[in-house]
Length: 125
Ligand code: HEM
Image (cartoon, rainbow, N blue to C red):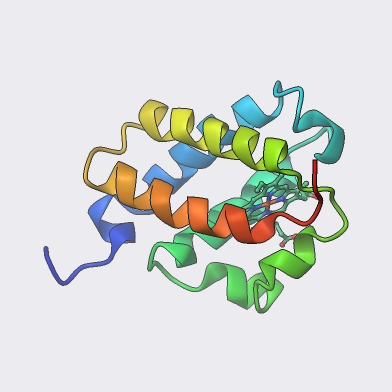
């Protein structure tokens, strides 16, 4: 449906959960990312599911629970270098494939997340 949201187009909440699970499974074993993430990623994944739901045009679940995203500010406690940005995006690229998000949505989502990831960098290499 051309007037629908990206959230609806990719299959809604179930698809976001599939994506987030595939993503944090990779984060958990990524040597660049391990040092800054908590050992137990359950809560991190849950918040990311709320966020991506609204980011792709679904219900404002993140806003309701956590308030305004202010993502750059929430990431300031962590050293986000270009290498870590690349690692994050690589985990996401693979997760988009595993979650079977098809084109043109796969590329559209990846591009939107790349812009946000660039904005999150706060530390030179
Ligand atoms: C939280 C790293 C990019 C969305 C976090 C946390 C870390 C992190 C370490 C804290 C995890 C926790 O304490 O539970 C990174 C790195 C990135 C990156 C290395 C590379 C550029 C992004 C992007 C998005 C995003 C592009 C959005 C599309 C979030 C959200 C949270 C979070 C929603 C939870 C914030 C909260 O409510 O506490 N990230 N992140 N991150 N990140 Fe990222």
